[in-house]
Image (cartoon, rainbow, N blue to C red; front, side, top):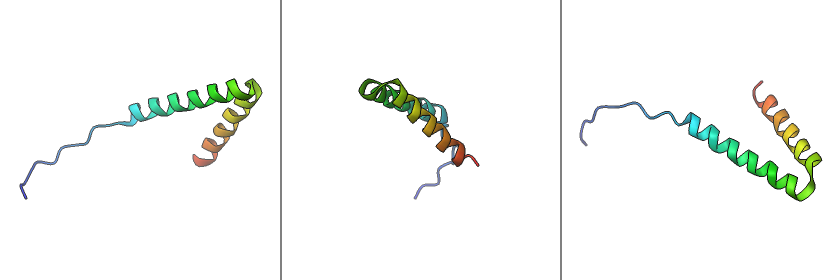
Length: 56
């Protein structure tokens, strides 16, 4: 094996968060289109509650 200098890995946090936001937004628009605003609001509130539980 060659001895190569170790370089830091790129930070992909921001692209990951943007992609996650777009996926969540698409999911909520799909739920809204299929079942209405109330269900989309309920799914969003439920996901926010799950994120709150995971952050503890």
